[in-house]
Length: 385
Image (cartoon, rainbow, N blue to C red):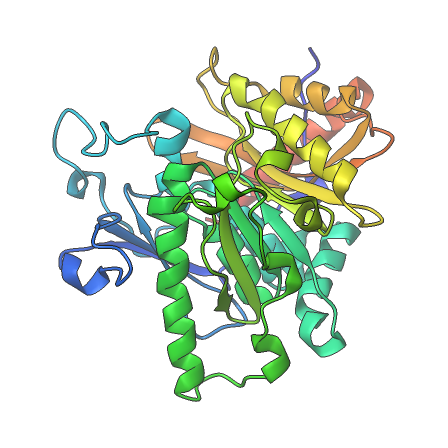
């Protein structure tokens, strides 16, 4: 199997304009959710977008992994749970893919930076610049961008895209919607309302009307009566966000109405394609949405991080083959090196997938050239540090 090497020109360093950090919560009462008596995590991860003076806060059950830089607040490993087992181990729906969703991973930062920070963070890729411009011009031009986030975890990426101006439906498994995405949307939604009520943020009445895309995301009475299925949409910054359950192992039509899936322009997935067993169900879900979408050219953006562990974990080249076998085009639009605790330095990629003729990514004739360029860039960055 020919190894994939990213285009050197699409290397994206950490953008300091996106400010992140995390803190250990010592006083649980100050973070209570008025709609739920349960405490949703001992760590708060925060993000402040380049275009905003206020930050979004997210309750997590574990510290972030490979996301923060030395100058940003970070929770030490020694401050986290002390014991042989996770205190949430016996919770219904708690397994590896759910457990990892309760913390923040490097691909989330890469995705948010590329689509919300200045153009200098997006390499030379024209498509990414176009998406950024769409988000920034959305309100002034009266446009809209409907985004579906799958495998959203605690909802960091979807919430940031909403704050930047998109309408975002943030989805994951029931346990994550109920204990992660939902509480975090309510928390940030209340903070946003306070800013508007206090006059800290200018408000156009038109912007305060929930978009049709996020109204009635429940496909059936069964789904609608599930308390984890769909919560009220909330206003975040310049856009809107709403949560809903979307299980890749179940038909999309049983979970979301076609009136919703047909209106999706962009699908995003961060740090959630790592187990081999998840790849095909996810791609089948994406295929269904591609078929339903009325957008002229729907897009799927996903991040992938290389890892040392194999076996249960899918290799990037295997995943790219699966995508190309479906006749889709896939290309790397951004990448960077990330250092993950206990796992070393690995490359993290942002890919764009569109239905249509596939682009050959694993061309051996370019591999050596790309690898040499990549290594040169990495060495130069190390010297600067």
